[in-house]
Image 1 (cartoon, helix red, strand yellow):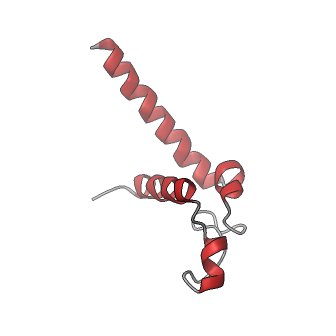
Image 2: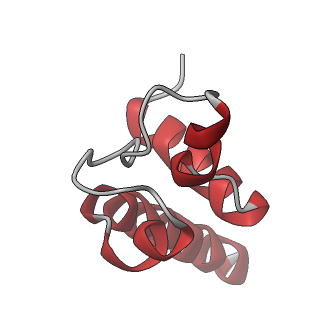
Length: 77
């Protein structure tokens, strides 16, 4: 089973890479609310996910640290 943090990281990456946000889906009735999936504080836009969502930021930080750790392992081997 995947951790919640891993799921949130994957979902935020998918949304950013495909420019799919609740703000765009809501007018079509595909989501119940335009609010951010992660923090529920404001409308979910690409700008919000990249620059102001505290939860999205924390999952990006974790992903960056994991990437840096894996790079160190590759370099040391």
